[in-house]
Image (cartoon, rainbow, N blue to C red; front, side):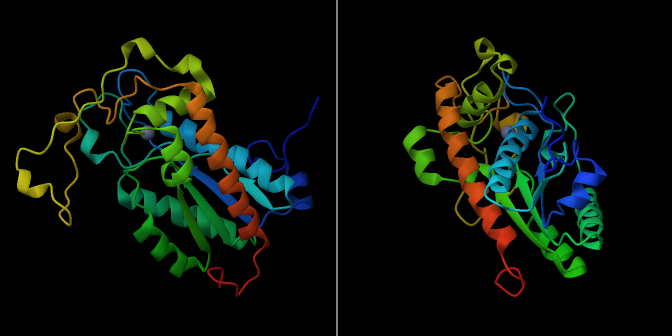
Length: 257
Ligand SMILES: [Zn+2]
């Protein structure tokens, strides 16, 4: 029987971790929110964890000193608080968590962190700027749905924003028993009534339930597990390669300065 995996923090023993000291930690960060009528509330956590876990495994095989941290399950859902059991982390909470995780790691000689983000409402840039200044760590953010645009285009006519073809295909591939395809809506969206606010260069968050009647954005009904697998494999390969290069990078080699 295979033992605990030293590159998965929740499995690794202290002995393994001391023997295989990591230099880059990977933190999946999701959200717990409605995903149409047909996907689990934990979709973003499931996706981010699966991509991070497979990518860390592949990178370690290539020689990276990478470590998968347990996922942060909650994200910013300030505009979905009318939807039952949708848990919101404020930006202040997210900043405090990121700061504490990073500071802990830096004290133990791990000064490289990759956030594997699964949720579009999580805006990490300002948090990362502040925590990097405070801790001296180098933090990289991966928004998984923006990876491998060529594969994305070749695989999906309309990947959708939320609970659409991309996310539904991914969950079908990762754990098909979690998808209630027969309940999937059409993911239709309703534009702002004040049309002038919807133009390039002008932004406000969407009042989600008003603009997304079935909570989805993009039609999920063309999803297949094969499409999910195609994107998953490409995303994992891309993140693994990046992790390996980041782990091998020398101090002073930009952006690890
Ligand atoms: Zn999602």
